[in-house]
Every structure is written in C-alpha cells, then in structure tokens.
Image (cartoon, rainbow, N blue to C red; front, side, top):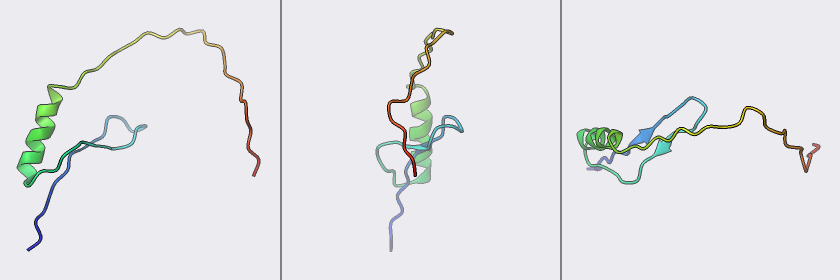
Length: 64
C-alpha cells in the first residue's frame, strides 16, 4: 500500500507563483492545521516608495 503525503502550497496573488512550504504531512487534516497555524505567524511589511522614479535604461537588448 502506498502511503500518501500532503504538502501545503500558498497562493498570495495572481501575479505571484504558488509557494510550497517546507515539510510534508501524513494526513490532509494535519496539512490544513499547519496552514492555519502559519496564518498567525505571517509577517507583512508595507513600505513607502517615491512616486517620482527615474526610469532604468536597458543595458542589453536581445534580438532573436
């Protein structure tokens, strides 16, 4: 009999890829509990940026 293992994947935003958390879990319930425990530990930082920014010039262009 093959034993199933579960992993936890997070999706923060449509523009970002899925992120797999470290570790595997023997049951789906244990994986869900780990994901819920993580919710309380996530740190979010909001920073300010200047509205006026100089545009960067391309150093290299690739032609195909």
